[in-house]
Image 1 (cartoon, rainbow, N blue to C red):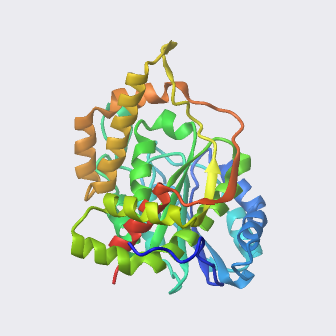
Image 2 (image 1 turned 45 degrees about the horizontal axis):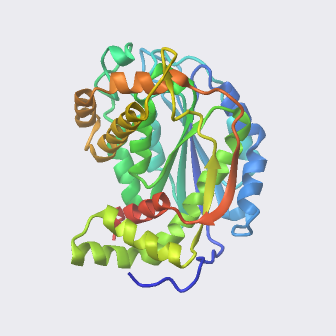
Length: 366
């Protein structure tokens, strides 16, 4: 690969569109209130790097609950993009978290609305999904009983298909998972959301402490801004290598990462405490390194399954074959609920960040 000419891609004033997908079912009111109360902090964090003027940043919102007969109030409520922070705070203030019916909700419909939103050409496009539940149809047996729509969204809004379309359209999806509720109520939920976000070059972020929510939102957006800069810089080169050398995305990422690290290339990075211990216990017994490694390996397989599956039905079938029940039950046995720290740092670009750039380069529309 060509050698980078500087240790940093210099940012220029551009535009940023952030769409919140907010779970508005029971138990979500504290998250809604925190986002409303701290939206000025989120905006100021985004503006602090002097990369944007206030009018360059727009916030949009899609609130979601569920389909009848599980929920009779609404499926989704859409609020258009606005650069008026006070107006957006008012939109959030109008939401009341209640209802929801069964455990899964209509994230698929919210994702479909976000995909079709009035995104600006040339803007960095970011979707932030905040939820403590799974979409319908992810796992439809006794591991997640009570799914009113076990085969998926009744309107056929498949989250995996929509995430693929988002990736092609240049929309990055980040998922903020409200823990430990997600993992306690939905075994395999973290694996699903990691695979889903990865389809767009985004990430899943654990949230166990409400106070860090503003940092997670702003930090994930700033990561996406830097990622887009590197996509612009390296897209032609990455696509050329993929076409001419016929090597995998993983190998391209390793090669590019080596070059960028050698050049000292920096990337905005959201640094968050992991709310899970790697060395977990099951029934009070400390697990061996072999068991831990096996669990982590199988969880990685689950993430890759959701990342590669064409639709929920295909992924669901393969996950059942992998035996997700045992793995997730063991892994989730020692959930850590404690104060969580989070911050945004400028750090040497990581392999995971390069992998996101390469994925975006390869899937984007020409």
